[in-house]
Length: 275
Image (tube, rainbow, N blue to C red; front, side):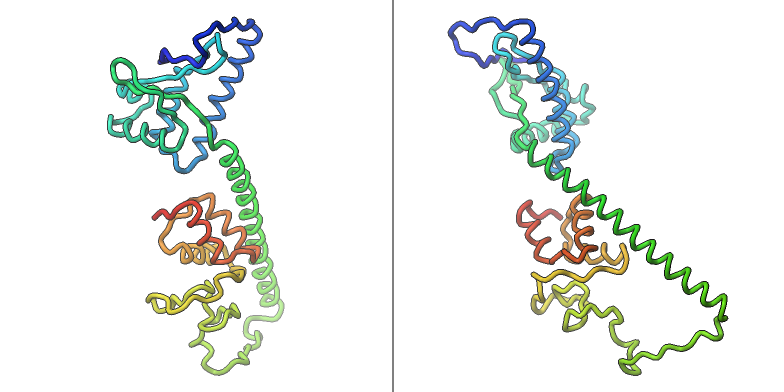
C-alpha cells in the first residue's frame, strides 16, 4: 500500500502535464525492474528480502503532483500471503536486512504501527560491474576448461596411434633421471621451493598448522586439470566461502597463471569472511 507521505513542500506545486506524468510512470517502472535486478544479483540479499521487495514494488505508485514515488508499506500477513514467505519472523528479518543494506529507507509507521519504506537502489553501479566481471570470468573458465579437454584428447589420440602401430610390448621403458627413489617424492614439481607445495602458501601435507608463510605475493602455477584448480582454490579459502561467481573468477585467473594467494586474502578482507 502507499502511505500518505509526500515529497513536496507545503507551498503550491503546479500540476504536471499528461506527457510529463506518462514519462515519470515509465521511469518508475524502469526503476522497479532495475531495483529487482540489482537485488537478485546481490549475494547478500536473501530470498525473503527479494520476495518482500517484490510485494512492495506492487504497491509503489507515483505522486502525480511531484512526479516522485510515494513511500509504501505492507503488513506482515500481506507480505507472507503475496510473497510466499512462511513466517512473521522471516518477514521481520527481511525488513531489518532491507534497511541495513540500504534498499529500504525507513520513513516511520502508519497509525496501526506498520513500517513505511522508501525504496532505493544504492548499489546498482557496483553490482552491475560485479555482474560484468563474473560474466567474463565464466567465459574465461569455460575457455580454460575446453583447452584442458582438448589437450587431454590430443594426448590420448597420440598414444593410441603409437601403440597401434608399434605394439604395446615395444613401448620403451623410461627411466627417470632424478634417482631410484623417485616414487617417494612429490611428482608434481611446481618449482616453489621446499616441499614442492602446489599452493605456494603453506606446507599442508601433514595436515597440521603452517609453520611459515611461503611466497604469498607470487603467482601460483597453472594447474593441470580443473579438479586440481578447484582443490587449490579450496585450500586457499581455508573453509571460507567465495560463492560460485567469485570461485569461477579466481579459477580463471589461476588457469592463466595470474592468481596469487594474496589476491584471495585481499578479497575476503574487502567483502568480509563467510564460512
